Amino acid sequence: MPLRPPAGFISAFFDPLNNPNAPTIGTATGGDASASVAFTAPANVGGSAISAYSAISSPQGIIASAASSPISVTGLSNGTAYTFAVWAINSYGPSAFSASSNSVTPALVRGVWAGGRTSGDALVNNMSYVNIASTGNALDFGDLVGTYQGAAGCGSTTRGIFAGGSTGSDQEVNVIQYITFATTGDATDFGDMSVKREDAGACNSSTRGLIGGGYRGTGFNSNYSLIEYITIATTGNASTFGDLAVATRQLGSCSSSTRGIFAGGSGAGSAIYYVTIASTGNSSSFGNLSSNARRIASCSSATRGLFGAMDDLTAGKNAIEYITIASTGNSADFGDLTIEQTGRAACSSSVRGVFGGGVSAYTNVMDYVTIATLGNATDFGDLPIVEGYTAACSSSNGGVQ
Image (cartoon, rainbow, N blue to C red; front, side):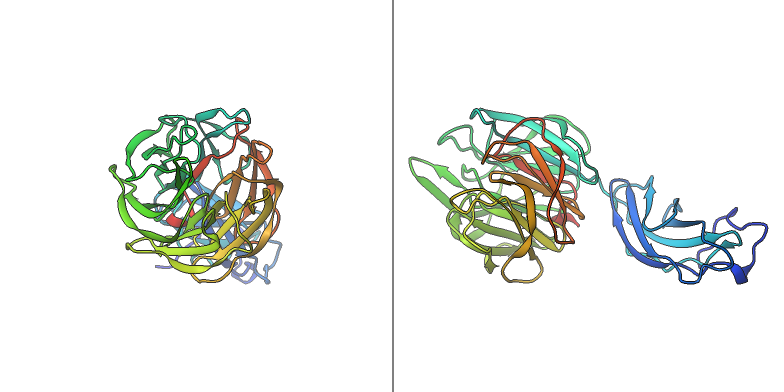
């Protein structure tokens, strides 16, 4: 049955000949218990100026209004799939409904930074969080089970995972721990990896987390090529997935819902590799970064992967590069971060990537970019402490979209 405007939206002067035409629906984007619904205004506004636009959700029939595009619809249920229709209103009454939008599933959009090292070389166990959809300083989340630097982070819509790291020189660990995004509090033990390592890369789908590469310092740098996986919703030890083409550490990693990406590092140089997350097996060649790079901060939407704050083996850089995850090929220039840094960590929503911390000159600065466009980063806020070699994860990253 076609949608009908809600009761009370038709004025006493209703005249179908003077009603506006229907808006053209655009793209709906999910947020935390909310959605942003874009549309194009009709060319024919009817007999008087359009006074407002409204959107209605399906299911639940939640209505929101705005003077122009987009319309922010709040009060939605996280985890429920919605579509939206939009109509215009003038003094004669409402237009017909637009076509229905794409389906979106609102979710908590929280990014969490964990552990790291301060400018005084003190290791920390603090965790802090931000709402990626807004800007502002990070807030305290809780503590890791130990004081670690160089852990790897990934996550589903409900759980964040931090794997490995070290408690000091030549003191790598194999512990995996988890948090629940919707609450705050200390991390809980998840299980163990088969090897002790820090500076690994991690990526995920909505169900699986992958940890690849890293190293263990045993008087020399012993790099790993091993990829292991976990089922995020459960707890337990990691299982063997396959191998990276080369043993590497300090690499970047990101994902779509189907592909995991591993890029660069001290061992792989500029090489980018991919795996299919739902299967097991060794990595395949994807392309190359613009130069040899390590200590890469990376994040993604469902379609694009970003690599920033890279150390080209001489100094931290402010450049950001991107790839299209579903294809293969070399990375391209995206824009610049606000500061030159390395040893940062990044996380993302479907819309934004956020980069925080750093060790080139220790900082607590966070920057953000809009992943779907190109351009330079904008200041987001500050982490609670000045730190680098942190890990980060989020509840709405490219792997779960």
